[in-house]
Amino acid sequence: MAQKAFQDYYSDDFSHCYGCGRLNEHGLQIKSYWDGKESVAKYLPNEHHIAIPGFVYGGLIASLIDCHCTGTAAAASYQKEGRDMDTEPPLRFVTASIKVDYIAPTPLNVELEIRGKVVEIKGKKVVIEAKVLANNKTCAIGVVVAVRMPETMLSK
Image (cartoon, rainbow, N blue to C red; front, side, top):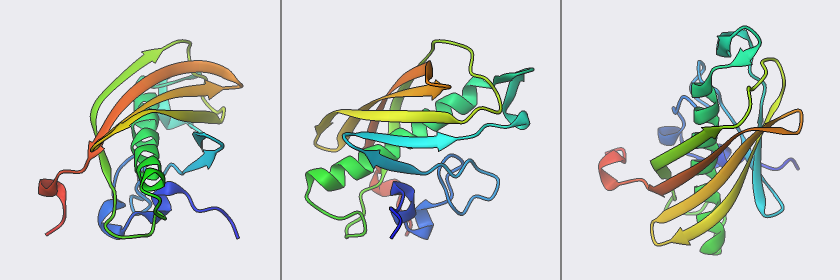
């Protein structure tokens, strides 16, 4: 049986996000998985993700880091609680802050690898460090502070 992505556990109510929503046909639909103690996602940008000819728009890089890290926050929180990701109540996270440093130009039409590492889990907050690689070269690094989704965002 194939491993399910973190985002595959999200209910339909939480699957519309531009970055990771499986129900958003115009979105990125990224999928994140555990790879040892790190999380990993892969994404192939194409011509409409252009900044200048041959290179990826920085907003795409930030979006990949953002959604990969919030998914990682959820998965890590389930692990910390000793729960499977399909158990109730659901643990969903939103971004409280994101910092992205662009290290090198990111080429278009090259599969990107986004790797995340949990730095801290404390209460409703999870801090994740991430890096984006193209051809095994780091193009961007980021830090996301993810917090549990507030009640005001939950479907009524």
